[in-house]
Length: 203
Image (cartoon, rainbow, N blue to C red):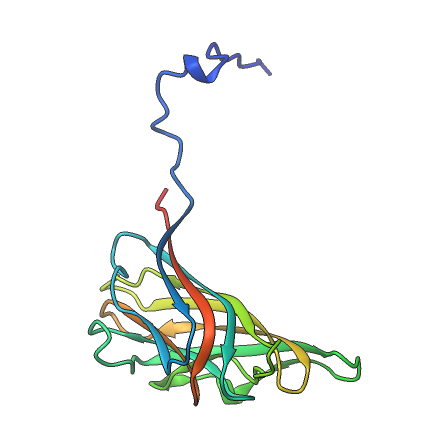
């Protein structure tokens, strides 16, 4: 096998780099919650600029104990959040006291052509030191040909002192563009936390 030797031996000698993919995360919007709000919405910049959007939820603290943290998408810039969803949901958990473990599918938190808010994680605690963090991927939201897939993973310190890792995935069963997303608790307010929206560069 012949060895290939490149003549450009330094960065300064490179004359073209058009074939190098751009890649990378691009921060678009940050929603910082410092006092109680019923929901946190992203109603702009979800468009054809990126094929993949990533939402990072950081230290989300709910006012109410043991409620589900949920999300839904909109096809009308946030006027309505009731897009049809088919989804799947499972979780793994381990108690602080080492007395409870679980790896299970949770039928009560999936949807089959439902229009409700989709659960991302269940049972977060509202103690001062408890919160939820994780991420949600949304794929090709501007497509008018295909359904819109999503997948997410979240961890929380639950109301009964359990580390709970939940996995939610599915699709918005619509060929209309998803142009807004909303996060909220099943009841009560979100007291604090940060939600960041990124776009993944096309390569």
